[in-house]
Image 1 (cartoon, chains in turn orange, green):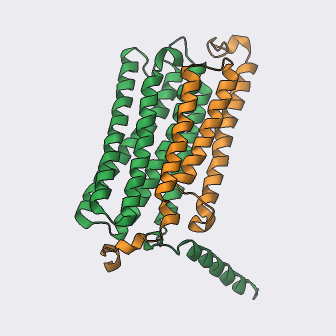
Image 2 (cartoon, each protein chain N blue to C red):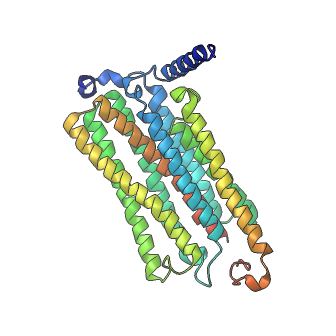
Image 3 (cartoon, rainbow over the protein chains, first blue to last red):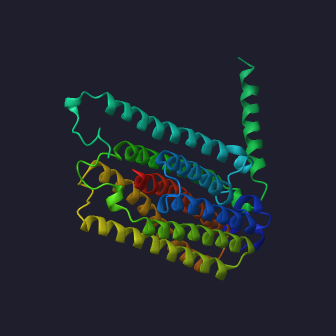
Length: 127
Length: 213
């Protein structure tokens, strides 16, 4: 317990691997600002007409920004905790993708394959 | 039968070796808490995954009610996004100050982060208030139920994060930057950055994609 209550300014020395450096935070912030600004601009100013292309770009920018945050702010790398941090992260990413993409895929087909009389109307005719 | 025992001990040794390798820097990392907290965050991500999936499925179920275009104010969302992003880097500077051992600097950055978090929650509550005043309550349609559940769950997490920052301000003030407080601040750092990652999903998939419909 004495070790726990000790004030040890040296404990964090050489912790660059754990919390990252000032540079990694600033680079992460600059990249995130750009990756946030562009999709907002794409939707608010609408320089590209096709909604499908804009939607694809928004998803790509979101994925890129999530990766930037993971590397620059959460400091996930191959060596942290002997690789278990990264392994848990990748596993969660796979589950996330299966849950979200799978649900939307299945429910979309369920909606379109419903008999017309069973639909309430608003669900099938997307405005 | 006799060959099983050496195998088992070999496995245990290897595992121990791997674990030691990851901890060779800083005593704050010598604890299994950080990995455990990371696993918690990943399970929390799965909660958000189910809420995102629910929203994705119900995002066009308007039941004749208002849709994203009628409701969302993107300028407000852009301000909130900027606030949360800035709060992420102010917390990051707090962690850098912690590495240098500056108690005052850590408290300053934590307080600034908490203020930014509070403005985020305040703007979100203002948005919810506006929606409810317009009659777009969670009971109105499946889309609005899913929207309020997802966004409010994130907002609740941010609120918990602000309370945690408040507790850490008191802890750091009383006990300084000892090993336990460093570990707690590292966990809180992961929690806070994780919430910003979830918000990327919220503003991209709920607000921006919603406005395209």
